[in-house]
Length: 264
Image (cartoon, rainbow, N blue to C red):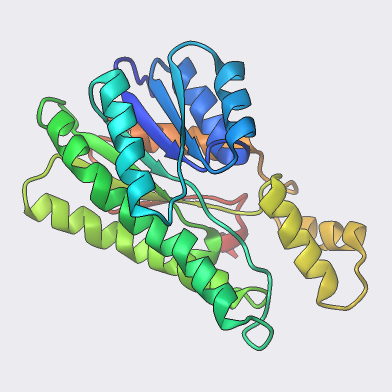
């Protein structure tokens, strides 16, 4: 199940966290992997740790030139592109009143423009490979549970991730209407044990002005029906599924991996 034999994948923001684990699992499933990130040495270390046919390419997702170069590097090395994972994202952790315009622009540049550019500039390569694939090529966009329900702590992050969720559906419909064999789905992680997850905990600790990280973690666990935060493997397994032919009849869908938080 969820095999990716013969597939070629480009994953943005894959030097660490969910992206790095996705790269590892995809490689284990038989795919050739390109890791894109601005963290050069961690990115190269991740590529070396995975081993096998793994490429590291510098990728600032806000840069059209970087995306063009990254796609060219992947197709030049591996001969095509079957899977794009728009994973790169940042978290702000500020209220509407606290956030500056520059911070908002940076949040949009990474979380929204990065997904648009990746989709647009990888599309020709994905279309070409999708033509000869029984289930087509695949794009997986990283949204969030904050893209499904409101966030009292970071409404601007929620706004960008809601945009990713609806862009996913719209892109899926556009590509289907045009006859492109490119599926587009999103994944919506809940609280996950990553650097960004730590930022969420820190934000929650600041809100009552206690800065008590342990209490913020405890309260977060109380709200989780499964009683634990997610791991990078929990999320990466969902991404691998959406990228695989097992999800061949899914497009415009959102896969929620959140420990039950949005079921309440």
